[in-house]
Image (cartoon, rainbow over all chains, first blue to last red; front, side, top):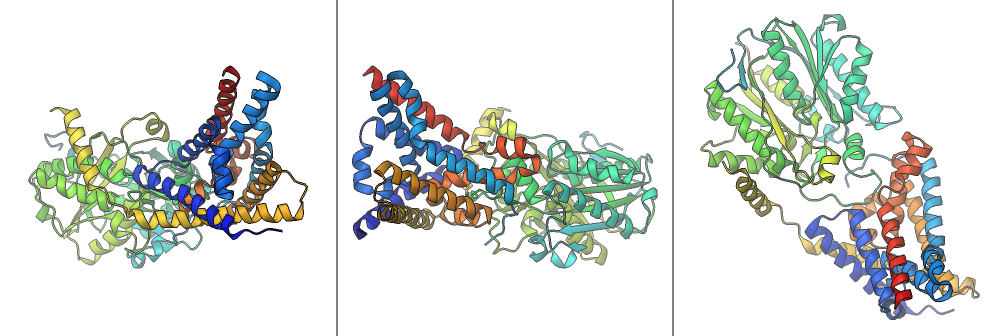
Length: 125
Length: 335
Length: 148
């Protein structure tokens, strides 16, 4: 069992830095949730396509995989690996196969939570 | 008679406010106008299962309350003028379904209260009807889910955003009776200065308020100093600063007697950013605070300039700018 | 009067009048919240690697993300997450929590419009673009790889 404290520190710093940069964008441009998610997702796709992301992930650990950048990178990685194995068909299957778990959990839990809970008026804190 | 500007109407037959009623939601009930509210909501869902139904029930409650306050019966009311913020003004028309009286649905976004008062006073002055009920309401949560995002989305509100008022008010106008009198009104023009930011309604509506105030002052031959209070509907902090600037450039100086219903309704320390908004904002403040002060004599002459931003989610997604409108009514304490 | 010119001037005037938000506090909050969420992810990774040593790195990643998504869904259901999001801003949006919250909140919000037209249709009203861009982008990346 290894709990390397350095991994936590680096996750905190890199993850925090990415979020801090995104927050600057939010404050300066009042960008909507959808747009900012798409923007950082595509950043991940691009980083993976250029082969930069694996190094980044080795360095930053969860600081790279928890942000939506990691989601984009996994999609791109799946498609590229699919291309290596199965050509065109692999490209089409690869991305969603690699991320299927996360998407399924998101959809199933959204469905269940939607069935069970009601939304409430925002309260000022 | 209609004055030469085709907007201002002077009433000679004294359309009188004989009753009023206001409801504020839980947050509004903590604000400065709390003491003047007719009814304070504890539960902003009013035991209904959706916010749309809650808004409808709120409006029904307000209308009954105002009729009761005027000492009248439902059958005495000739016509109900009302509107709200929801698509196809469903809250008003569904509330009207319950009453079985003549209904005229109005929409000027947040300017609906002043529009209904101006129209109601005109109808009475021209002796078309003798008792008119004007009612408007809005609900934070129903507006939020229609115009913005799901309530449970963890987003930050931009600093120029405003908080839709949960609440509303109704006013009963009558051809006879005792109470404050509507002496003149100005119907506004749609004014668009090209603002596209949906989170900055104050800036969209301030030019319309400027236009209507200037037209009204000219049309009635009055000055800013003649009024004890000039209240805009829901320009908010930024919007009212802009209005003061805009009017100053036109040579009209708003003084201490100017305030904005959106600034009056919430405490300064609440994180509502620019203040209150929504069609219920001016309706609530008019029928609580302003009406109270008119009745006890603190105010003798009040100009209510309710402002509305005439956008829909479709137009703003298609990149259109946001037009504004403002309607003004002048209410005077009867001698 | 030249209304285009007037609108331009007015827009410039309004821009100058906009309240200046202080950048530092909100960025610091986003940094803190985002960093902590990533730390929690790291904790999940380490724990799962300890409990199930046979899992591959990719499987560990999926298990960790699924945990965070599920927890976010529950927190959203209990109405905690909108408060957390208002505090943390991008610090909750950029981690996978933002994705999860954005799929759960419309699902809860629109349940009154029915299971099919409410929950199922509106569920993707905010994250739809993420999935569309993600799939299109990944396929594009794969195609480019095939061609090169």
